[in-house]
Length: 71
Image 1 (cartoon, rainbow, N blue to C red):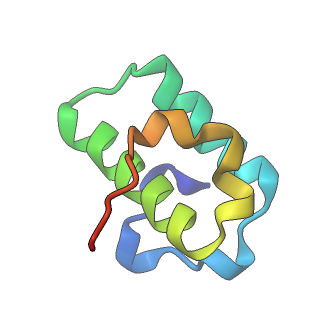
Image 2 (cartoon, one colour; image 1 turned 30 degrees about the vertical axis):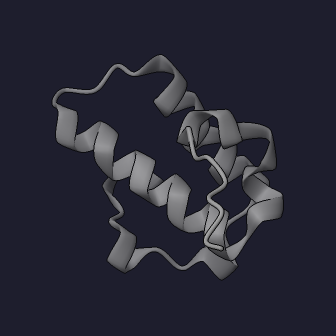
Image 3 (cartoon, rainbow, N blue to C red; image 1 turned 120 degrees about the horizontal axis):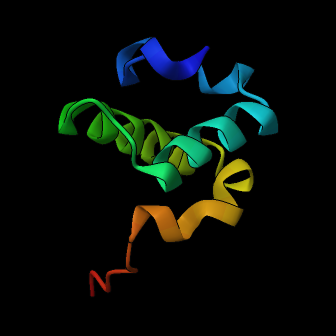
């Protein structure tokens, strides 16, 4: 389902944990035809993390995001 989605097409409110699991498995396998497919999946996961962090919590390591101190 999510393989052909872009960030612009993603309706985060409709995603299930199974959808995010599928996305995470693809990212973990890192078996993409080209780098752009992998980058697209990474952006999808990042978008989900900002809007529905509870779905992405087990996969935060895939995002390699660090907390920034804006102070």
